[in-house]
Image 1 (cartoon, each protein chain N blue to C red):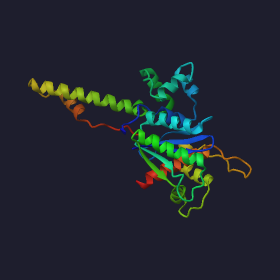
Image 2: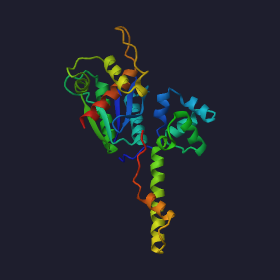
Image 3: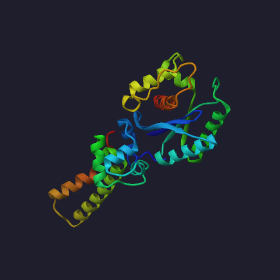
Length: 159
Length: 115
């Protein structure tokens, strides 16, 4: 099985293509400008055509307790529609579900999760973990890639 | 959507080595990263020499790097072997070493290259 997971962010989206549960085909961050949602949907559409995933995994941004902004929630809905138009199965996972998979008790930050993924997939993520964020700094875009990987890993574990 | 193997897995292996498309192109003897990009986006099938160069660069066999293509080629070969075997049996040929080889090929399953 091949899955594509996407994690939207302010400047674009992180993505991972995972095959046979633990083989990372590709991962990265796509930066988008201008009409962000339109461009994101187009870019994901290209990935659907290129990688022919069996499943697309997205964050359930309108789940109860989600603090994602309106644009990201709208983008998620658009991505779901895009996948369905191309007859690709979609799985939505809430952030709390992902946190539960990694931390059990829902505590744990993005940096810790990124470190856990880097330890588990050293060849693909070993040197990608950003430094721990200081209060005044913006979030590193690489965390979106780790968020996408976390979604993928959680989706695989739930099968 | 189908879940056959992808035509190639060059991008993932390139990422693991921390190489850019331009760096891989240089190693392949090309002038720009555009060539690498074409292979990674499945727009071109490389020559045998380029495929072997990829094996050297990524230290993975060609059948693993180009797993989808290998799968496709394998199916065609097995089909041809089965047809040829059928033809020889229909003409009453005795079981020769060649026929045993054809039989093995025809009966082989769709081998998944390890990743």
